[in-house]
Image (tube, rainbow, N blue to C red):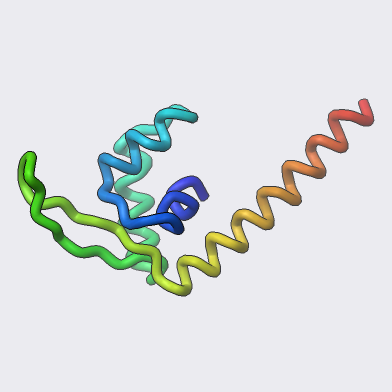
Length: 92
């Protein structure tokens, strides 16, 4: 869900996604790259290569329209789940 939310705002390359998400939660390359491969295979993202001024070309990830729909769905489900958990915790 975090990857989808970031990709809603702009295109990112893999290491950049890891760095941004790592500012808030612990995540590793071993988590992100397989996820990116899977969502690309599912048609939720496309990729393109862009030259870098500070190293080799980078593979950027771009959310597809289907990916945008999935992102909205995941966000809705998460908010609903978090609300229910919070209500449960408050009632105890």
